[in-house]
Structures are given as structure tokens and as C-alpha cells.
Length: 438
Image (cartoon, rainbow, N blue to C red; front, side, top):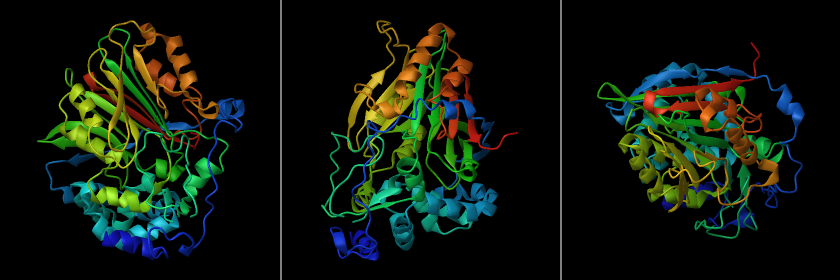
């Protein structure tokens, strides 16, 4: 608690309900209303002129048999010459106030229970990259910190869908100001494109011999940051345990796959109810053992032994953010969307094994609860479903699913990464999208 109070006083506040004592004042009146905004979905100019190039990410290996503090050192050294870029983009992805605050107490925050063994991994990564530990700690909280309530006169929702009705994490005070990163402003406030941050699909393949998993990450990263996306092979006992996607300095996962003809599985995570976090609550949750969804995913990938085990793992545990965990298995009908609040499991929707649902052979998730409607200005669901239904189960294979992931508006100017995963035959194909034309 002392550290949390220090953080807030460092921001110019006498307590976490400081309100007008905070400087500089922020605009607390903003919300993002997707329903009434002109839709970008029908922007045919953007649709027809996107000519970005697919680039295969660098591939590295992390040995889980090493002590946590040593696992990422060599990877960090490979990108030590990019240290200046990392710092530059962390400062773009994070509000100035958050960077300054986290940097001051990183050495204490890094050991909070919510980081578990990832604490030492971050320390080792910072050493390998030769950058301040505060940047690495902040980077691993980047999604939580890019729109953060530090201290204003009222509570406001932000992001494509705001706080969830079932969200039980309420602000500790009425006086908050919102510190936003340049990236957040550029992506969600100033941009005409008001999209969420992901699309994921799990589907039975035409022959019913396997499940195919596709995902798009739509985070609107700058080109240089996209170039730091990595494919990581995690090994144990000299053998491949799982493969995942991440970004240099992040010890968390964006998506991953554990290969296995009978017991393999894959996952991706889509954001749910994207709204600003309250710094005091966020750090208190970390101190009490809650994890970021992407770090929780590492834990599930390293402890689960089957598709069913992984689904159960994603249904359990305390999280800092709501989220959707999309899980694919090795065998027919092994596909699920797990809907999570911070503290409990809300719903799991599986592929329809009965065959009664016409489109039950696949499950598609963007950033909205499947049992609810989607805002018209971010309806990536309807075109995605139409594309899947148009292909039909009889035409589904890896190439067809990649075509769906590359189809507007599932693929859009904010798309950074596209992956196709098949756990049963160890297919893990990812590309990041470069603005350069070759």
C-alpha cells in the first residue's frame, strides 16, 4: 500500500482521490460512441488501396529449464541495438505520467505476486536489452496503462465497448483524471477507424481431421514496433513445449500453440470491454496476485496438457482485465470461446458437435459478447460470418482461413499481425504487415 500511495503522490496527488490536486488537468468528458460515428467499414478507398507486405517475424528460442532471470537475456542481447527504439515506442504507447511513475518504483512493483516468475524474466530481459527495468515493467503492462485513471471529477468509459455491465471492479473514488498515451489518442480518439483490437476464428477443417485457428491482432502499432514482433519457441527438456507470438521486451503472449496430434491446442486472446484502468486498483490487483491476461496465458500454456485442460485454465484465475480466450484443439469440434471478467468465468461457447447449428462448425470472436449485438461502426462480426458461411465447411483449410483473416474489414489498416495455427500438425504461420512495398 505504501508503494501505491507513493505512486499517486508522485503524480502530484495527496491521495488517490485527489481530483483537482493533480496536474496537469485532463479532459474527463470524452467517451467513444461507436453507434453514432460514420462507419469506416464501408470505406472502400482504404479497402482497395491497402498494399502492405507480409513479413515473417524473427524466430528465437527460450529455454524454460533455465532460471527465469536467464531465459530472455540472450534474446535481449540480440535486440540491444534497438534499445533506443524500444524506449521511444514505450513512450508513445504509454502516457508520460505512467512511464514516470512506474520507473520510480519498478524495482518494487516487479516483485508483486501477480507477476509470479515473470518478475525475474523481466529483470533478465532488461539486463539483456541494456535498458532501464522500469521500461520493461511498463511494457508488460502497456495495454493496462495506455489509458489510465490517475486522478478528475467523474468516471468515464473508453474504448470500443466501455466497461462491462458485469464488471465488479469499480473506481475507489470519484475524482480521476485520465492520462492517455499518444498511441491511444491516435488509435481511438483521432482515427476515423474505431475498431477493437482483434479477430479470432476456430474452425473444423473440411475433412474433419483437424481444427484450424486464425487470428488478427489489430493494435495499430507503428512500423518499427511491428518489426519487433517475435515468434518464440519455448522448450523444456530439450524439446519444443509450445510456440508463441510476442514483442521484444514482453514476456507475455499474444497467441500461442502447443503441438500434438491428440493433445495439442492453441489460443489467442481478444480484448473485452476495453476501458481505462485505474492505476491504484491495477497495482493493488497485481499486489494481490491478479495477472494480466497475456501473462495468465503463459501460465496456461506451460501447465495444461490438453484442449479441455486449457479451456479450464482460461476459465479460472484472477485477471487484471476482462478478455476472450479463443481456444483450438487437435481434433474435430475442439474449439471454444471463453468469456472472462476480471474475477470470474462468464461463458464458454464451444463448436457445435451435434451438427444442429448451420454455422456451428466454427466460432468467430471480435471484441464483443457473442450473445449481444455489435456497434454498427465496428461490425467486423457480420462480414466475418458471411465470409465463413460463403466458404462453407467443405471448403475450409489453412489457405481459406487465411483468406478470411485477410478479408476486409477483418483485416484493416490497424491490423499488425496475422497467424494461422494447427496444433495437430504443428503448423504455426504468422506474418506482420509492413507499410513498405517490395
